Image (cartoon, rainbow, N blue to C red; front, side, top):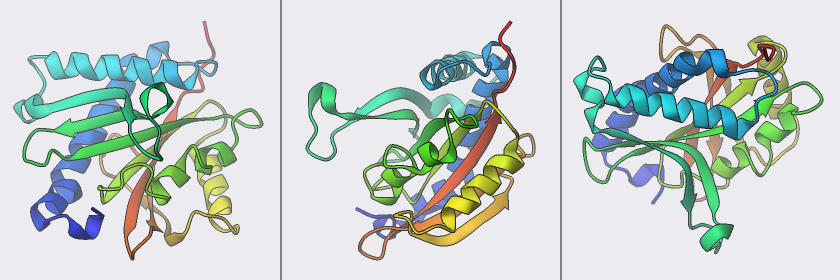
Length: 217
């Protein structure tokens, strides 16, 4: 089922409430664990720290009640491409909403960004952004997010790198080029793009750049 088959209520959930709340959970997790994040952390370590912090937020009495029906999954295995058991692909971070059925899922795929060691090509390749474009990830979702853990340089550098990749011949099938957005006032380095998928389907991808460049103590 592609995005065009989702009912209008579900699309409304993504376009207004769900997007903002999912991004808020991610940013809370990032903020709460920032002192432990540095430029030598592995992707899985950063994601694990963020997920643990999100779970603490979901349990906190101070968290707004509307978050009571959200849950968070890390390294969630999915049965795609005929893969089974331990060979299944895994989604880095998934926010699940219990506000309606079928339960909407907001997927975040995270990649390290570090000049020379982890270039933008790793962010957009068949293990990254292309998984969304090809419908391997989020085939039933109208939008999802890529998260760049910036371990060198700043957002402007990586945005320009991403724009450069979008202008090259590739399998990214860019329908709408990169544009600035601000889902949360506290999270300024957010962009989005639209990509064509099969059968006249398309997906909106939000690109969230988080500063993870601190030196380890």
